[in-house]
Amino acid sequence: MKNIPPDLQNSFQLHLEQESFSKQKQVEYQKWLRFYLDFCQKYNFVQSDQNSLDHFIKKLREKKQTDLQQSQAARAIKLYYKIIQRKEETQDTVNQREVLSEKDEQYKITGADWRSVYKDLSGEITLRHYSPKTLRAYTGWVRQFQAFVRSKDSRLLTGSEARDFLTFLAEKKKVSASTQLSKARPNKRR
Image 1 (cartoon, one colour):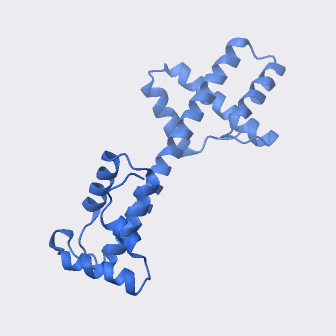
Image 2 (image 1 turned 60 degrees about the vertical axis):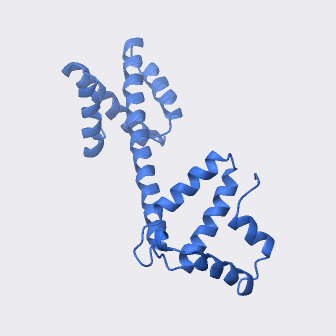
């Protein structure tokens, strides 16, 4: 019979203890999880696919397991799904933080922190009920401006730097004046 991998074993055991299962129930639930993992391996079912549970219960029925045993097995496997789903969500959160961290580092050329600028922009866009698409567009323009001023501390910026940026957009990037104005002064809903 297949052994439960140690990290899963620890997570499963911890969850059983947190749910205040008796020692006897803990042993039984772990047994059902081992049977399930073994079943999935033997019959080529995906362990994390909840549809595999139906096939497992059907097999238990064929092996003349009682309704109570089938019900207990189903609860144990549903607990397993809950644990692996939580792990996936945690991993997704870690991955998102890493991506955000990489983006932050990409625009911190001189070490000045512009996160508050982006946060303020997001708050203002939300307050004005602009669309998420508008937020993405404005964020792109702010990133370009941040790069243009080499991530100089935003509190130290002057109007001349903003004018220089608009001139740069017009002359070097060939951005139209109307586009510059709409980005410089958002006054209409989008």
